[in-house]
Image (cartoon, rainbow, N blue to C red; front, side, top):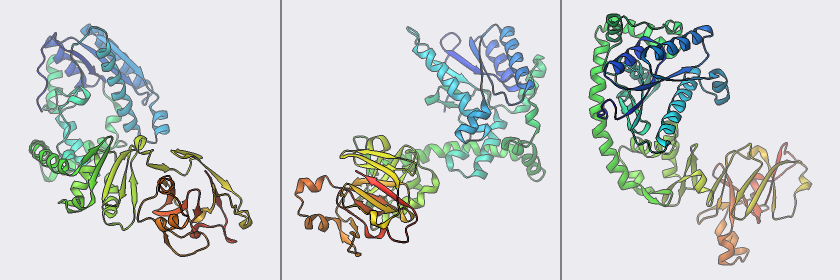
Length: 440
């Protein structure tokens, strides 16, 4: 992808500067090229006094080039702990969230329409290490195409990506540029450092040109990705049918998609699902009964001849996911209260708006949804399965009353036809040790 073609004076630049040789070289190149820019420095407070030293260095650097400076200190360790991620992931998220916030504030300033970009000093050696990490961690073809030199969606440019580290060091020496060294770069504590300091040197003993070969492969994979994306776009376009905020895919067409696993991943990845869920979603295609899989943002529901992909916020009107820690759930008919209950078998109530169930057989998350044709359960006292449609006919419900019937589902098993009957398999018995009560 080509960089945006802007000249000094017609764009606004935010340059990420750590104080290391890479970012110092980028600052000097921009200055010599006549660009005006703002330096942004993150102090992640991970290396004690060394972190403060870096901050002071960057402040002096901004004075040297007479440019504006933005500095922010982060409690990176706390962020990593709260968000249950690695320190590296925490630093990355904090850094780019802050950069994006600055760019957004620039764009929102009244009367200013100048294009704004974030510039980072990633170079070719970073790209080599990234591709290797992707490969060993597990990746698709996009992961093998390396770091993108330009991300329009993030207003992010990496102008040094075609240069090797040794070239940047040589430039700094020729220009007599001072910079700071990050002592953690010598430690293999972080994954990238292990690849840089240990793995790559050993591979070079067998394949001396491994780095050049990887860079050549990155260029080839980038070209391949363009063809791949075009082909995927055509195939998925023929499968997905948008209906409001939902996407519907005919089960029969999805099952015939070739290669099935690859196309299934390309369909679900854009909705927040991860690769480990692909086999489960493929199983949904051949399942006899309804089922679903959820991502942080969407759920995929098998509804007879259709696979429905719906946003969690929008799917609430028809399908509601209930996690174990929830105490209630709101749905069109009212509110469902969830609470622990006594295990006394005699406590089974006759109130149709309550269900007292044996917790041991219930698996979360639960699915709260409207009943549909083909549903069946084991009505309490019957101990054999019965279609929900027949059950409702026997209750002599009108057509409009049937439309208002919802069910509560656990692991693809209906545990309660809400307001009418629980499933016999989940009843309280003398062997029940833990019970759960649902109040409608």
